[in-house]
Length: 188
Image 1 (tube, helix red, strand yellow):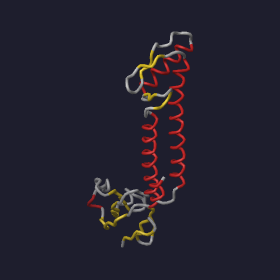
Image 2 (cartoon, helix red, strand yellow; image 1 turned 60 degrees about the horizontal axis):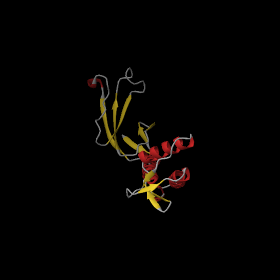
Image 3 (spheres, helix red, strand yellow; image 1 turned 90 degrees about the horizontal axis):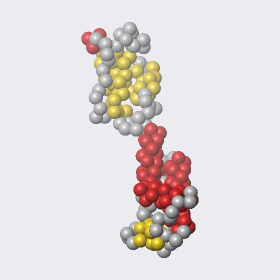
Image 4 (cartoon, one colour; image 1 turned 120 degrees about the vertical axis):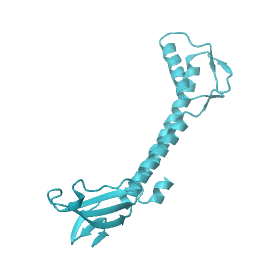
């Protein structure tokens, strides 16, 4: 008789540990020749909806003993939920980093291309090159660039926004790591 207790298959009084999955699975068991499996037992654990595994020996020499449902393991569910939540936090952080910023009384684009152009203009100016005569804001209005401090103010606003987004994501991910339940993970 097959039974599952404490995430282990019990067969003929012998306990066979089962994998900790984050989704329900089917456990199927066969008696097989000991030349194939030294303990004489083949156990397939297959998540619901995935192809079933069968012994890779002559099935005529095997005896199918039956199947049982394996419920998701709480720790595996928690680990999967934490990984998904952290991925969402990182995506939200990355989106926050490129939102338009306020500086010099205007709104400025902070997307990757805008950051690259701004960084290039600052490097050129710091190396003694010419400043761009104007810098275009989020509304496509030109602002005269009178000194490198104009460009540094925009870059500083972007850097502050990025740092704030990262700090918030670090705090949220720490809360995810500390979470002990699925509800706590979702609340982080």
